[in-house]
Length: 338
Ligand code: NAP
Image (cartoon, rainbow, N blue to C red; front, side, top):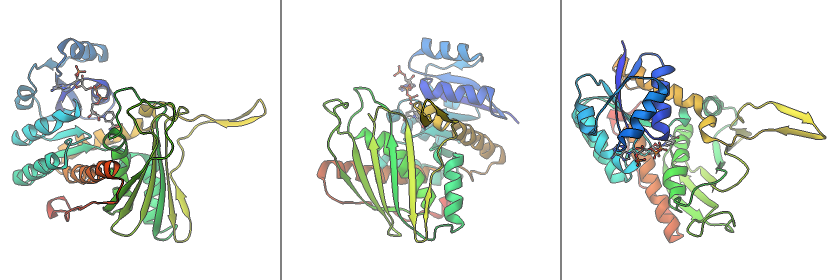
């Protein structure tokens, strides 16, 4: 069976996903595209070398009879509308993060999916598909270090553009930790606090950088995450779990170590796309497999997208107030229990 996909939004990640859905993965074909920029969209698919019909209106693409499933990779504020329309059409939909820009928007999607009665939504949180995070999770699940007590995490980018604002450190950057750490610890957050250390001279005038986010979980685990998006030196993701009997750390991506010129050295990745490139393949293959089996057992659900949004809202509030802000997460509905 070949799943015929319509892609809404043919920008940076849209093109990456079209490429992998068309050339790399098994059982998928991109047959339709939509973007607000028709010329750029057509140029992009021509470059990739596929023949996909362009739709000027995303809703026509969603309803098209030869489109089996939708991939939403347009600008974040458009996601809610397109995911709701896909559910209304009864079609599976993979939505890049964020599922919606507010927790209330994510909740509308959760409610619509539950009303539909069958899971259709997968959110583009790829880190749980990354082999290094999976190794770390197995170590915790196998009780290698006893109960986790505290985590030290880093999310560093070499630099960001002028349009990046202080809240984006949460809604665009930390959002990946908010998702993957819930999955890693099988836990939910209860509170958030944000601290601003001395500001780097490399950040724009309107951006507080770096930031430290301190989260607490229902199990009482404390998570300390440093976000530093103008660190200059590379794209560096770290996660260290301190347990009762030891410490487990996220494995570093494999790089050849060199002994030369009087130095012992190993490269650090700079491009975020390379760090999780395999994870993107695995998550989208899981989406295709979920459709083929008719059973959405793998990947982040709409509920996971909602949970990340609830935590992100509290973190943004904590940025503004300087206080410890409560994160109130309702119990997971049975519809989403794994
Ligand atoms: P991008 O390069 O700006 O691409 C977004 C595309 O959507 C652009 O071509 C844009 O057109 C188009 N678009 C905007 N509004 C639209 C609408 N109403 N209907 C149809 N198309 C529309 O951004 P990106 O970096 O690809 O990011 C897209 C989404 O993926 C974002 O939500 C982002 O957070 C997410 N993302 C996730 C990851 C991850 O690691 N999971 C990585 C990167 C991005 P214009 O350029 O003309 O506005």
